[in-house]
Image 1 (spheres, helix red, strand yellow):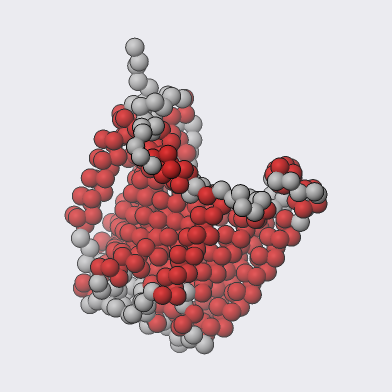
Image 2 (cartoon, rainbow, N blue to C red):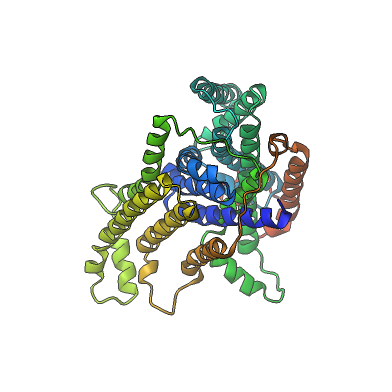
Length: 456
């Protein structure tokens, strides 16, 4: 595969996951992370250009959604605060822990995608062994670090990420011991990609927020970056999706086990969960009003609509849940279409699932956040950037070429640990080196200090 071709395919997935991770920022936790996790699996399957991957796409989508969502249990807000602190000990610690946490977030989901595509399908006992090793190692690491040593990664918040880091160690050991080369490669690139993405997202946000030097066009650039909504969220998905795809492309997918009916049943369930279930869960648990969630969004909706100049803001606000429900109905229709094309082997529609899920979630976000109702001609950058990224994805689908290019297993499974680890360490060192002047004007607020520093 030519480097330019690999870069374009990886960029498509990076843009898709970056957009999805930005939408995740509005909904958070495990549910919010299902969208970027599903897009990662779907997008990767699409850009490989392999017909066999079209058959695996439903399972890759649902497993990506469920495995990536596990990271939503970790608390990481204070870690971003530490990385924004002006003192060396705090911001160096903050960026280091963001790499650990972002890496754990990506490791599990990307490992599952790699394991599903191993040349020899894993047995149930092997899946149980991988999960057992991860859980046992995580609990042991928690016990040693938190209970015995008494260390808290972010005092006042949960230490779940400590257990996740221990789980990553146990998972890597299991993968190496059991010679699951492609699963190991997925875990590694997931860890590096999303770990680096989490830290770099914070770094770029700091540069945007805390610098005021005058360089030609800097104010314009800051405004553009501000238009991305939450630039940190975008960069997490962009870098994570890009690096995972770049590292994993080239593996010939195993044949889908057509003779096993339970695989077909799993595909059907996965199709409906990805395109219908994820939007419906957002409708029920996030983008709605009581009695389902207990979070009354009606006053906020009404206030915004009134500010936008609508004659009947109360009446229009009460129609918003219905509009989101209509999007969910469209999701059910999209799932039916995908189901028909999937079992009729309509490979030319391979891009449909990732584009459809992205469009559905953009619609939900735009309705819930009132972007859809913003006065025409006055839309801010943050209201346009997600549709803009979607257009770029669509242009790639229309004009991009994705011939099926595969490599021998010994090449596709090979992992150059050293080069990528050196790059990760070098970028961490760069962020730490530059953060001194970048964070210099930041106030040392209480929630940004992990290690108090005596100031004269």
